[in-house]
Image 1 (cartoon, rainbow, N blue to C red):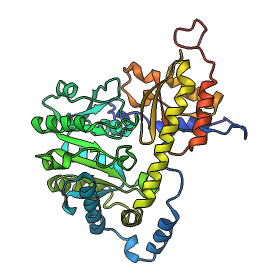
Image 2 (image 1 turned 180 degrees about the vertical axis):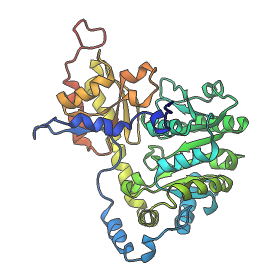
Image 3 (image 1 turned 90 degrees about the vertical axis):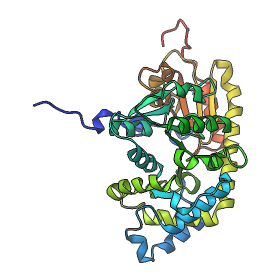
Image 4 (image 1 turned 60 degrees about the vertical axis):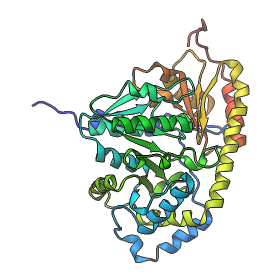
Length: 401
């Protein structure tokens, strides 16, 4: 009997659980605890006022029932108002769908616009869950290379568009690189997608931590945006609601009608408690989020300052922003073996860039991703001291790796 490959077998295992297995059997002395920069999800609880508000929500019986498939009307309306004010455009609640996290927002959007055998342009390094979903849908992820500043370019994308191309996906601020894409780059991609009849999907999960004041682009003001542009968002990072799974799709009502089919089949609705918490956050936590942003920007500055310790050793900062730094290392060994070795010998847990690029992309072995959302300035200083102390063979060094 011929054995067929299932859709889940067609993609790689989740990288984060794989990396967590590096900790098995490793102990960390009190004077040198583990510095975990492998994952960006906030590990602290939501702010205390939000927790109090959520406790009160539990007494409302409707919190425990199914809700509208595309989300609570009040949350859709409030996010539409917030989005319009931030981006200087005008959208209504009918252009907002609430999903169970941004990963589901991506999955629902791609399910609504693609079928098996289609192609989607995905910049490399890519967010690995995006690649995994495309694999599981039988959709080909076409690697879109980035330049030396880790920015994809419309002119590069143009040459990759074929008859089965359905969308271009961008993540800005970027995961894994942290790079904030310039407005003119986003404008160029919008023009290209509109000309080619494609969807431009812009994941703006980390928009609340962009270093630039105001809106990072004006795509909502551009002609044809309602038929071309799809924006994705997550409430997880801004309000520390990762476990409550609340994300959003901002797009044309016709697209959301297709997404509604996906939602009703997979999830029915996003968790009610999380949606109510997100609504409360939008209405009450703007000042608190501004403080969180200031803290993340200070940690970003600490990363830039820390590079002075390791640049003489040959390290290179390739990307920095939001919760992420993307570093090119100088060692003879590749990142896929260096990353678990860092855990054992330096008490540092970072992800190798091999988790973010195609298997045949050699750049993956040269870089590491650091996620600094859960390490303060002092810990970042310790991190760079540990990296500076590494006395491993460098690339080109005659010593064995």
